[in-house]
Length: 407
Image (tube, rainbow, N blue to C red; front, side):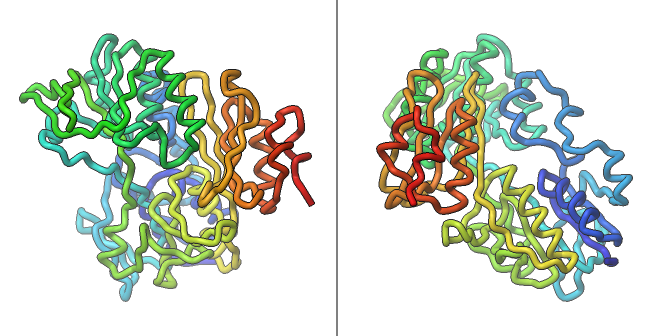
């Protein structure tokens, strides 16, 4: 298949779609546009080994530069796409260049949600979304420094763990009543809160930031609505992300909590596809539209989009999975726990190896596995099959998870 496919966005999805398009037999021109100066690189290590200085930038690249040369990809790195003309099938870049396309793939990802409190623009207040963010944080990243982290989600807690291991003093401010409240059950929240406390991290729940004080040299204090003041040499805000939809919306492409795509990763324009963190897509397994911030989802949607772009009709029908590394704890999550009516804990949380299963009418919807890859692997198959389980058997870790399934 010939033509010219333009890929806007240079993250995990972009690296995979290049590989998948060539494997699917696409022989036409490929152009990759990314607003960062780097080749597509891994994002998960940013809050962990890259922040800690254990990995250099060269170790983050998903593929080496030779991969793109060998696959005939024209790289437009450090260049931003600013407009799409759907009728003319053309993308305009900030430098004035215009790229004609036969098909367009959008994978610009997401951006950090910004804190809006007074003083939020002071030097020393950072977000952690890309490599440049980490470089900025490192200027204040030193043992003994006082860091205040706003938000106790994945990014906030992973950053807290990295900072604490490096010898920084860490306070985490969370406006909800528990850490990771949007994604895990109270039992799992309590476990991670306890682990962070053991490491010397102070997590303050039901705490809302009211403002920041400092001077031209940087932030010095974080103020909360209840009147407390937290000294800070550094602030890292991790309060969620927003899908990058502005380019698509301005072009007239339908958006709904992200760029809206169908089960083939097509947008409302038949020549434009979209994948990754920026899209909302129908989940066949959970019978609703979802927007997923997941490396695995980006890779899998890339494979689906590539197949459809070369004319091989393929449905995207994957159960998502996620992970988080905090200290020596690996949290593996498979599935989505929408509307669960029962939580079953497998194992002793004090053992630092257990699982938390989410059921609805005995159907296994999702599972959180802490240092427990065996249950994670078994649960994937049960969840994909919409399997029902016996809750009493499931609560007994001596019974293999596959043997808890009821006919």
